[in-house]
Amino acid sequence: MVDTTDFTAELDTTGLYCPEPIMLMHNKVRDMQPGEVLKVIASDPATTRDVPKFCHFLGHELIDQQERGDSYLYFIRLG
Image 1 (tube, rainbow, N blue to C red):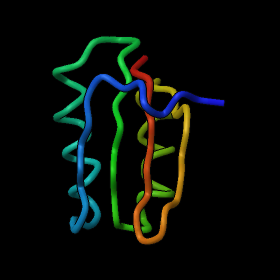
Image 2 (cartoon, helix red, strand yellow):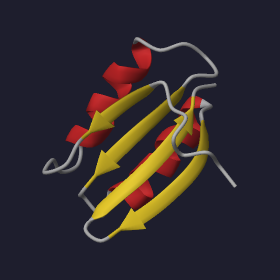
Image 3 (cartoon, one colour):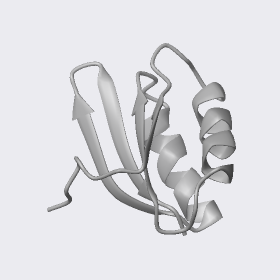
């Protein structure tokens, strides 16, 4: 079980649609260090496809993915 209360930074992309959430994630991870955890909040269902691909291609670990009503939560450990 992942401790979802332990994250370094948070990015809320609620109300934004592809490709904006991924573009904002690219900008956010530039300011972070390997091993840090980014919490992403999204409302775009396309993020369920895009966030895992983002992690895979850039070498980050998607440590948790949750759906809460109309929101999607992602916890990403930077590689």
